[in-house]
Length: 244
Image (cartoon, rainbow, N blue to C red; front, side):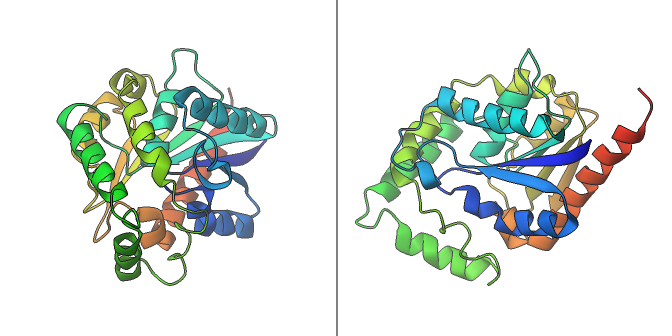
């Protein structure tokens, strides 16, 4: 069976953030899909509900699993949700997982500070859009710069989505991940603090830190991320050839 890739976006953005990866896989003839979580992208009018977000991932994974072997790829909040999904006590049909920019446990002072900053930005007249646009213009290459904004920014869903992450028991979920697994972080990623804990909880995993890269690793270094995506695909293809 062929490899099927399912992408889950981060907070505020949408499925459009994966355009470079979808184009890369399409050129290789590998099937892939990117979901929009509730409150984001094409579903901006919906409220963000944790159960609905998990159901969105589940539908995409099970649909892909009907056609092949599933590689699940999540970025930031999408990575945290995908950890909770793939690490469930009753494991779903996920054969491999890439967690990008998501090696942090969303709880305590760190989560409270993130929510405080998000609320402050949302209180600005443009909800921080001017600053976001300037940062992306300064850090992302021309080829991917528009991708994060193409589906719109889910400002209204941000605080609710962040608050919902506290309900997850990610340490237990990470520990249950048994499939081939890659943690990919940028050198200057703000969600790196607990990457060594994640690595200890998944001793079979690989931790890859990309130099001179921030949190937006998929768009900041698309060729590097795509190369790592190729490694994951090749690994699952090789595993599929092994006798059971």
